[in-house]
Image (tube, rainbow, N blue to C red; front, top):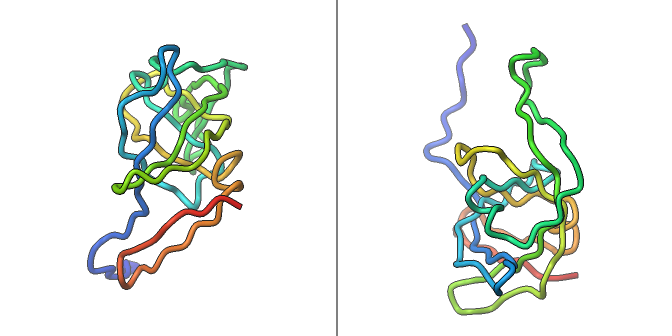
Length: 134
């Protein structure tokens, strides 16, 4: 039996985003900035209200290569801004995203097309961080 390491709590990098809709901007939403995710993902009720340009159908799956582990998704272009508690915000960023057919996924910000336009700084000991556009 293999022992798992003890982490004494979890560390997640989180932020708030707003997304472009057909009528302006969405309400602010909590988002996980996932340094291991290549593409952002949005639950159904979040992306349905955006001004999304759907470019195709695709699928994602985890580590298990079984057919029953495939999760069908759509891929689309979404625009949004990352904001903070003080009202600071990035410029409008346009990026590809996986569009989930369910609300059973969190909002995840991946690196492709969004975080590769920014520099992410964080201090895990102090639990602080910021994002700076390159």
